[in-house]
Image (cartoon, rainbow, N blue to C red; front, side, top):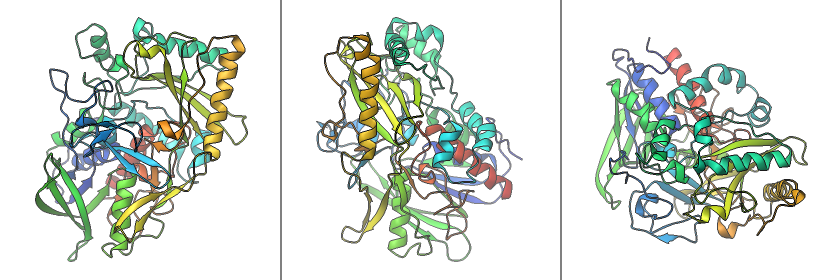
Length: 510
């Protein structure tokens, strides 16, 4: 039996085959565990590979964005309506314009892990249980699968020597601010190679993490995205082939025996179709991100290609209770450039409407603007859920999120931001030059999310083992499996842990 831990040992070929669509956290887990089990696996990824270049110029930067930051768009920016002109390119961030909310996804070999903020916290048990259905099994995840995911992602806490560096004065100021508020921040792990960060601080690697550059990729290579661990380990099994720039557009059941036929366009860097390819396999694992996985299934159901899919596919789309706010930081020194990724989460459990958490995000503003503002991600328990529906007029799926600006999530997030400001700043006589900003007009608030979740939710459209209801041999392993939220934390580690459990159960039963 192949190892299910961090080993890359692989079993002999089983004669079975699988297709994985997507290479983010869930897809990378599926690729590795299938390869270790000796299952011949083809992985389709619509984006390109992003190898770290010796000259430190793999990715675009916040201070100088270009086409590498945006998936086939002529602009890049914090909102769907306002952006900086860039060249048309298969860049990193794909912004889906929904009705009521925008959702942002990573594109490339590594998927969302290329763009995530490297936060890998485990949710508190009570928060997980408030969101997930009964039977989701937090204790099992905490005992086995969260540790397995953290080990593979090489996640660890911010080292003391880096926290004490002058570049990380923002982290120390955040600690002081929280203590004035009356809370001690809860530390957690980050998928960061801190030795490379030390090299950045010493001027021996491209300045990236220490500038707060995370959202467009990390040019020093310090981010432990899955193209640095899971995916190369999968390829080393000898059973896994990753196909970049392959955009899947058709999924149908195989007719002569169980399995699926998947069709993809091979695209070039101008988004032109070079050729069309087809592959078939015994098993199919959906891992294209919550929207795109759900979109493909919703479209296949509506167009009669997968008509037996549950009518629950498309339901339960949520934004993880996210509310992004900016606050002036001049009452404390956050540094002219803020070392990342940020630090420490505080919880409030006795507020109207339920618990709230708040975490500091370093802001990649060019020197000396880092002293002007910083950002905080506030997360609340929220029942707000939208849907991914088929639009017969456009013949495509779309997000419908019927919660306008000023909804309950906005009000709770804004109220907590102001409560924090009053107790931590105003109540201590701290001089301030402004107030928190939470407006959809400038891309804050809850109108846009990097944490779109749901659509093929466990115990609704899918079973607890990850199998999708309606078809044998069809599985979901990405954020669409979560019920619109994961419980007051960033979702990357939970998606990875859930995928690890799904794959462990699959390998054990097959």
